[in-house]
Image (cartoon, rainbow, N blue to C red; front, top):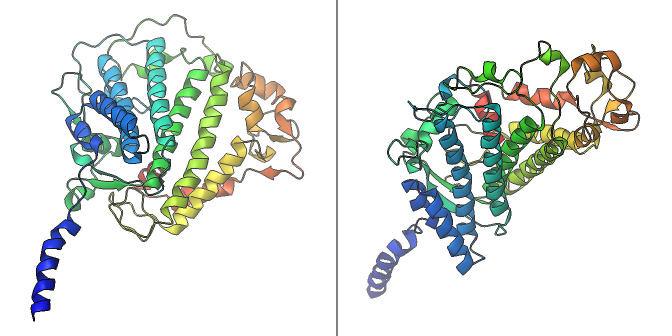
Length: 398
């Protein structure tokens, strides 16, 4: 009897200690307060004191990623962007209304996107330094706020941002009102992949001269637009976009290769997990916080598609001749996309030239004995992700 009393007393004392949750990570307070710059500095100082602290490094990478989003939003707010009218990537952030916007120009928008890409590169480099396979970053995402207006008052929550991008609210807000997520090693690779994907989009856009028609494309988004420096040519669509910075297309390709590689790494880690701990990107036996559960069939199909794109981007697969538009005066052979992007012609998208002369032979290779890009793998993903939430699934996976 005495032993039972002692055991009960000891277990009663010990139980709260065992059940206690770890303290919030350093990054969370700064994320909730919307003080990203201060949070970045505090995290850098913490890493100076303990370079092996991968939780602090993970938190720093998240702060830097979200700060890149906030900086982009501040720039769009300065130019009075009406995000609900935008369909273009990067312009859909739900920024507050600006009654005194500055006038936007093609070159000004280019500088905004270049700054965004530089911010993303910094975040990705931080995340790439994480080595601990057991790293965890426990965050309550519902209280994360952005100061897009730069006033400290008219703030946008992460929930507002996700709702706007998704065109509707997710169901998780009832079951998980704090939007608690415990990010782990697989999510490190996932966020790195997203940094690369967004950077690739910027590089692709900035590689070519799209000033022609700029005013027409953005007139419903930006209230004030500067006069273009060049007049739009009547046949600018058929004459194509001129490549003005060819190395950017190579950098775009390399970013996309990294996306493919990191997708594979993401699922290698996630599929090994045996816990079920407020997962961001779960395998089928784990609980999904967004209400968008994934099946093994969908994951496998996604990875097969990414392998096809990876092979194409690395020049290990060719784009088959039958997939090249029939209107093109096409020479024999499959297209080596790596050669095309690493050494593009100035008039890369000149459809008049392509239809008359075809694709330059230096970008073509004999198909016999070569691996071909399989459009069936892409079609399988489109079929599996068909439905009202198909885009949300795909966007979430990268």
